Length: 171
Image (cartoon, rainbow, N blue to C red; front, side, top):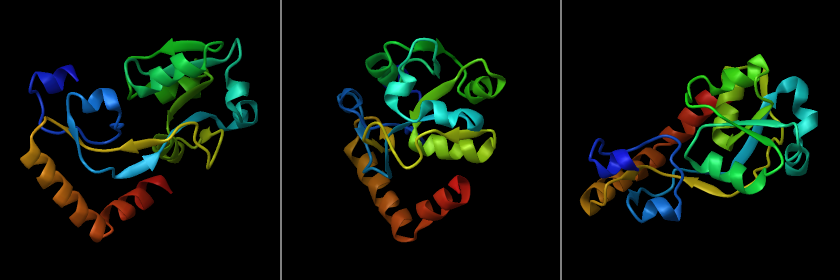
């Protein structure tokens, strides 16, 4: 949000949750994906983390990138588990693979993507989400830009381009 306020970008894409706090300062496109928060862990441990109650236990190490909706979820719902802050989104899943964390609560679409990229990782609650969440493209409060982005998004949808991209990378 600081970078948006400073005018450092025109549009934020991929994994931006549409939430009221952000909508106060930015415009969002129409949602392009609906999902929610879901846990990801080592495939050998999915049976240990099949519910929020099983995750919210002392000794469970939940890794999270700071400052976003993942951390807000952990702060609100996992008060007994240990929160591990990890600054680098590019290496956060490696920490689960190495055994330095037990799991991560992240967006269900990211669980599917990371499980596809890392065969040792699995969603521990497949098909379930712990929240409801919409993803959209975030931009400055510029009505003309929002209109253009939404028109482009509608064209992409009408040609099933998003569906094909999701199919290619998530299955």
